[in-house]
Length: 307
Ligand SMILES: [Zn+2]
Ligand SMILES: [Zn+2]
Image 1 (cartoon, rainbow, N blue to C red):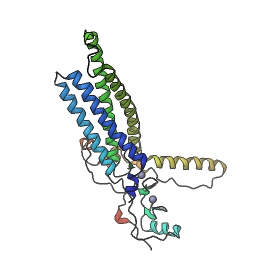
Image 2 (spheres, rainbow, N blue to C red):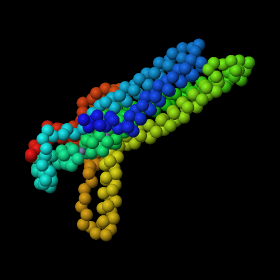
Image 3 (cartoon, rainbow, N blue to C red):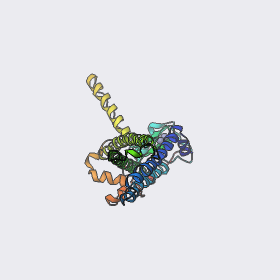
Image 4 (cartoon, rainbow, N blue to C red):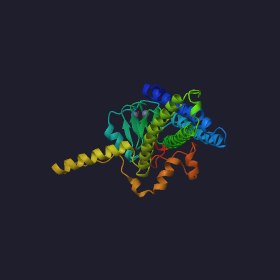
């Protein structure tokens, strides 16, 4: 039910429509106004057309996987849990070896370390990164790989279409200079329409290209440092608070929500946790990889609910 509520988020639905429209528009302009006029007599038309469409196909496949995959929703308990004494509940959980588990008062459930509540999905998500309207879903432990692949292929498609448009535009200007001026006015479609499509696609490619590359970089940094943006923010807040309180009094003992144990983990191991244990080539494909354990704790270690 929560996933359906999330799917109905108006901002997410608009972003989804905009994503599909942008992809199909880019494909239309590249084929109709770039490849056919500029490369119609050569094998380059087929080659560029095939490669560009393959990139778009992978982009859409990764996007679909990111949209429809479970980001790692923490299951809700079948029966209501008594949270009247949270302190003793959490100490009992720690005794059972569930160190770091917390309670979500909105989901009314226990959640593993690094899980956070998403206000849009209205559920707790394991290793939640952020809620992304472009996939109308949360980016979490189980779909982060597909999200990053989507960013990667969007970046490649943007760069590729920019190169194709600029090349075709230069070819067109050179052709005009070389004596095709007498044909002016007869050209179908008109020169202005073609230039308008070139400009729109260039703007779209630059905007999306820069946008996805920035997020792609942030995602890689968050994997390598093993700290999601939520954890970064919380850790920074705690650090700021403790530095201000230590300057006035040294009584504060607040602990960061996720200690970066990661500093000891090699970067490749952290990347493998997200992209799977297959070869680096498999990292580029939207294939299912076995989900990692939750900080060494699996769901079989869920605490017994005291009703
Ligand atoms: Zn929750
Ligand atoms: Zn969400």
